[in-house]
Amino acid sequence: MAEYVPLQNVENDEFEISAAAATNNEFNSDTPRWALDPEKQPTSRRTLWKQHLSSALITALPRYIRPGGLRHRDIGPTSYLDALRGYAAFNVFIFHIFGTNNQNDWQHQPILNLLFAGRGMVALFFVISGYALGNRLLTLTRQGDTERLLNALASSTFRRYFRLYLSSVVACMIALVLVRLRFWNGMQGGCWRDGLFAQIVDFLGDMRTFVNPIPRYMTGRVDDNFFHTKYLSQLWTIPVEYRGSIALFVFVLATCKMTTRNRMISTWVMIVGFYTWEDVYAAEFLAGLFIADLALSRHPERWDKQTMTATTPVREESALLSLSRSTLAKIGYSCLLFTGLFLLGQPQSGNNLGFLGSFPWGFLHRIRPWWWDGNAWSLFWLGFGAFATVLALDSWPALQKPFHWRVSQYLGDLSFGLYAMHPCFGYGMKNLVGEPFRKKYLGNSNSWWAYIPEVFMIFVVVFTAADYFERIDRKCVAFARWLQQKSFR
Image (cartoon, rainbow, N blue to C red):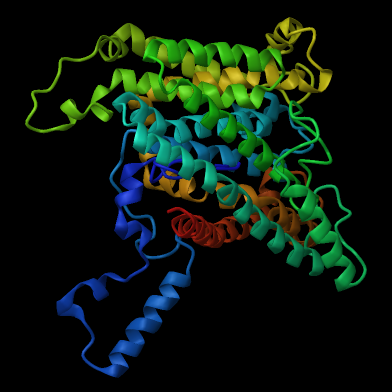
C-alpha cells in the first residue's frame, strides 16, 4: 500500500528512493516555464494577470492532459521500482473494478491473469517497500556511518506512521463525502447512515479502529477489529505495511554491526522464520531488503566513497556484477522473471489456469506447509513470485527499460492515489453511470464493444481522481517532514 507504495529522497521515505526524482525540481514544480525566463516576464499588469490565470488553469488540469505534464526525467538505478509499483496499483484497480466475477475464460489464461492478480500485486508492494526503505539504510551501514544511520532510522521510524496513515485518512474522508452523495457505499456496503451526525459518529469510530497500529494478535495478518475500514476496505494493507516497515527498521538496527555476509545470512534466517510463523508480509519486506543488499554488493560505486570520487580510478567489475552480465545469466534472469510473474498470477480460487487446466497449481497447492491456517494458503507462493520478479528486474537492467518510459514513471507517481481512489470512484462510475448508460443506449449486449464507453468513463474519472489525490499525498509527505524538523533537536 501502500508506501502502496517507494522511492524519492531515499533517506527517509518509501516514495523517496529515486535520486533523480528527488532532485528533479522541474518535475515537482508547477511554476510555468515563462516565469523562470527573465526575457519572458510580463510587462504589464494585464499581461501578468493573464499569465497567472493561464498558469493556474493549466496547473489545475490532470497531468495526463496538461501540456508537458509527462516530462522526461533523469533515470536512476532504482527508478524502475516506482513504475513497477504503479503497474501493480493499476492491476489492483483492474482486479477490483473489472475482474471481481472472474467468469470469462480469457481471464484465467497464463500471464493474462496477471491483470486480475490483486493479491499478487499486494505481495509485490511489500517487496518493493522492503527494497525502498532499506536501500538508504544499507548504504549507510556499509559506509560505517553510524551517526547518519541512527538519524535515518529515527527519521524513518518517526515519519512512517504519518506517511502511511495521514494520506489514508484523507482518502477515507473523500470516501465519506461520496457516501453522503450516495455515489459510494463501500465494497461490502453498509457505510450509509441516516443523518449527517450519525454518519460522522460512524466514521470517527471506524477511523479510531483503523488508525490503531497495534493489533490484538501481533502475529495475525488478518484481524477484522484491526485492519478493517469499511469506507475503503482495500486499505487493510496500510497497517500491514506499517508493521512490515517497523520490522525492517528493527532488523537493520539489530544487524548494522554485522559483516555483509552475516547480515545476508541473518536476513534469510528471518525470512524462513517469518514463513514458518505465517507472517508472509514481513518475509516479503525482508526479501526486498535482501535484493537491495545484493544490488549494493554488485554495484559498490553506489555506496563506496572511493569509487564515488571522480579522481579515484574505477575499480574492476565485481565478480557478482561480471557474472550478472553473462549471457547465461541473462537467460536465467529472463526465466526468473517469467517464473515470478507466473507465480504472481496464481488463480484467485481453485486451480484453473486456462488451457493448462489445473497444471501446475494442482501440484503446487499440495506442497504448502500443513500447519498453515487454511486462509493463509493462498499467500504462500505469492511471496516467492514477488521476490523472483523484483530480483530479475534488478539484476538485468535491460528488463527495466519499459519502466523508464514517461507513462510508466507517471503511473508510478500515481501509484498510491490510484490504489486509494479506485474503489470509490471506479465502483461509483460503474454502478451509477457506466452500466446504466450501456443498458440504455447499447442494450444488454455482452459484446466487448458495448463496454468501451463504460470502461473509458471509469478510466478517465479514476485517473483524474488519482492525479489530484497525488497532490494531496505530496502535501501529507511534506507535513510529515515538517513535523519531524519541528520535533527533532
